[in-house]
Length: 226
Image (cartoon, rainbow, N blue to C red; front, side, top):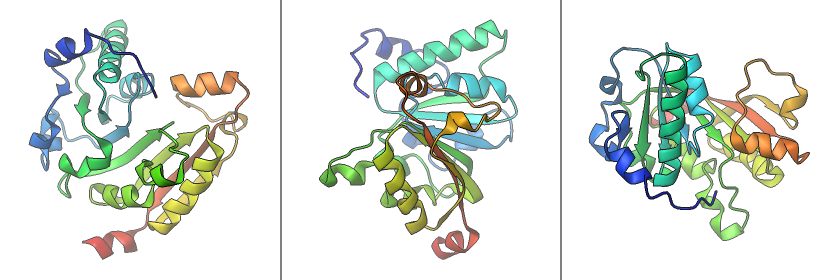
């Protein structure tokens, strides 16, 4: 997603207590960054923060790491988290923002960093053939997530893009993930507690059906990389 530069973003992030500018320094010890032993969920590509700012607030018994590379995105996410927690009169104690190129996610994560669930919401579809390996759901990326996704851990994926969705189904199968649920029209399912992202709302208003799936990593494939 293209976004205009926000001059205020970098200065605000540098003074933000829940922002990690050098996440590689926490590699292997992310659990210690939180003040409890709650499970960790991760959003890859947090965008403007509409999703993570809501789900983290709704689930105080889960720790969240939201990853993006662009300062403007992270700055907007920071502000949304701060506003939502302020409105709820809660301290920000279960969410961290990390600046990282997701293609190089293993720079900040290893097998000691056990993540129970990964969210990938409306990532860049990279439609051109030569760029498709950049997709966050591409087989080569899914192989990387295996390093830190726990046994039977899940990946929750949403997109508006038909081509990306169909290809992603194949990618998950190729990488040894079991697709336990999928839909080609999320909003027709009447899913309780569905958190609508900014993109989801925009595309839905345009009449575009939202595709979604949940994939689980099968134990036999974890054993193979151990």
